[in-house]
Length: 228
Ligand SMILES: *Cc1c(COP(=O)(O)O)cnc(C)c1O
Image (tube, rainbow, N blue to C red):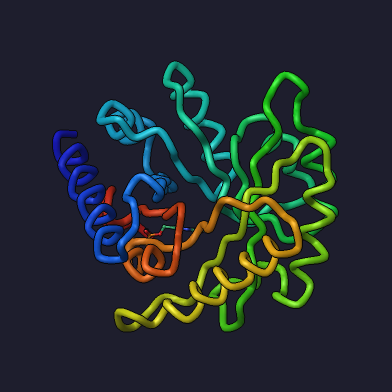
């Protein structure tokens, strides 16, 4: 457990260093600890070291962990593919969804978000080409989807997310991150109030921060390698 505290400190130092190199304020970069495949004791250990944001990609696994950690004031981010028949539980139990790519899903999330909770924060996942998973909205229709999502009453559109193919070398992800930032800038110029670029993982968080990431999603560098 001390080990996780140390790993968290190391990861935070890495993020701060990347921000400094990019001439950015480190407090502009939020860390989401990706706790998929990890158990609730590991989440609680990282939470005890001050980490608040956690990311999950499988709903049932996440719901069990959220229940086990409910004494802690944690912020839960859904980062996996979202099926229409699972939206209600996401709307009821999460604070953020990063992987929104269809209006039908967005409408359901908005309708199902409980009135007792703040609007659900959402990012649109953009498919910038060559992605590892077949998820994400195509860049040329992102604007249309963004304006439709921004109009839904119980969602708050925060920004864009991408998941480039695993890089072979430092710098490989950077063109993807740059394109996501440019797309965000275009949407802002169209009047959308977007404050989030969700991009960068263990292998490429420096490139993401250099291109303006405001939120990095990191698992391996914190928890160690995942079992398959
Ligand atoms: C697993 C995952 C991450 C974290 O990946 P690491 O390489 O372990 O840091 C980030 N984003 C998404 C969408 C993921 O599925």
